Amino acid sequence: MFENTQSASNELVVQWSKPESEREGTPLLVMFHGFGSNEADLISLAPRLPQEFTIASLRAPMREGMGYKWFHLMNSLDYSFDEVKASVELVLTWLDEVKKNHTKVVLFGFSMGMAMATSLQRRRPNEYDAVIGCSGFAIDAAGDPFFDDDAVAARKPAMFWGRDQQDPVITHDKIEFTNTWARSHVDLTKINYSNMMHSISAQEIAHINEYLRVKVLAA
Image (cartoon, rainbow, N blue to C red; front, top):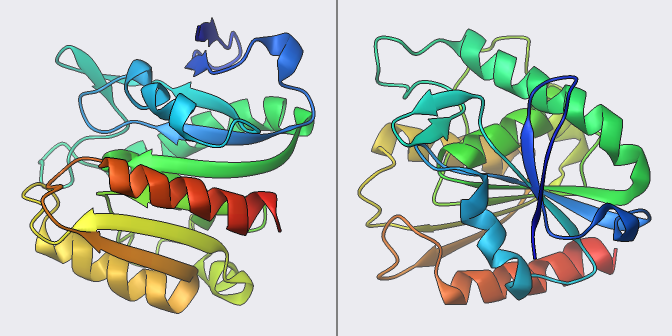
């Protein structure tokens, strides 16, 4: 049974994998859904991830059809990096409230959600134990000082990136930037999957489960 809450301070809707009485002292895994989805999407993966984690799945702040988005699509005329900054700061305000109750913090993003997860890492490079990215990308911010990429490169934080090379959604320029950025900034574990397209496969979830156990829980 998952529990939905809303933070009064910043209007983030959060779906939790555990009741509040069972969260304190656990590692925290924060989930970011993709474009047009919602907080109920990725939380369905919770039973297949290490049960030591408390999982918090966040709803993006901007409406998109029947779902939500973290910012406009980057090829849209309405896209602005200021939207990315606003979403990142919204999540950071919420995280500042809850992270003190947890022993570790891992960021998990699918598609546009991976852009959010990597953006939080780049904004505050020393606060997270790992980033999990599925079928997504990191944002080319053209050197905007909002991201402290030099500090990321100095720390080399752990990052898992899984994707299908035939993914029809994430464009080549985003993949090329993400690949170049990740190889020079993070301790990267990258796995290419077949016949997964733009999704998360059972095989990938098994790999993520193992990755979390080895790179986070056993660290």
